[in-house]
Image (cartoon, rainbow, N blue to C red; front, side, top):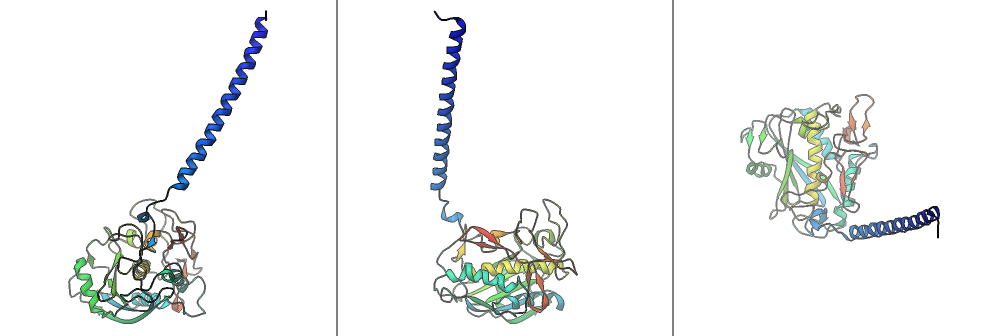
Length: 331
């Protein structure tokens, strides 16, 4: 007859053995669950609407004539900031322009989007090409002939005054004292088109006195979220440098999705496009409330990420890379 101590020792051995078996089973089960979970995730494919993809429509390529309608009062200095930016949008920019440059940003659009588009009508050129922006005209309506409160339906009428040609873009820019439906509430700019005529238009407003925290960030503190110090604008004009950001974003969307069947993500009536898919991202390491790591001018303290024509410096939005689903930045 075994002693109580020997029975206890046997019980300890049996208990230890059972515990070891249970731990082994649990570890094996956990590993199987982990493998099974990973397999399920690997098999999951997000719906097409959740990806920024090409919808086989037209894009704008080749020489793109751009005409500006200045609606309201803009100073010569303000106009020069915008026109110099447009003249910088070419892959044949001056070789003396330091890197990173506006033309490099534009070439990213050519590489990520336009080179992958098919041959279509509506002013589009053959796939595999590139786009060159040409500023061909400017018109001024300083007296605001349609008033200082505009509806969205009036924007195409204003765009028509610019005399846009097929495959071209009319750029309607409204002054800081002009209100447009939805401005500051749901948009800082927009683009539209006339598919039959093969033309497109862009509207962007100067938000300096209406909503700089929304449409000129990061050159003004945001309306909501972390109240980090505003960055110094390259031109010294918060409203105009904010306009350049939005013009760049709308131009990127216009050339890659001019007639709502090009490159976009989500609902075609409210799409995310080449630049709007990366809203708020301007440099590497960006996160909500932080624009990213940017270059800073030693003299003025201005923040920027692209050099342009005539010694200009600009802050341009990141561009979404459909192949990697990441935001591509210049710095």
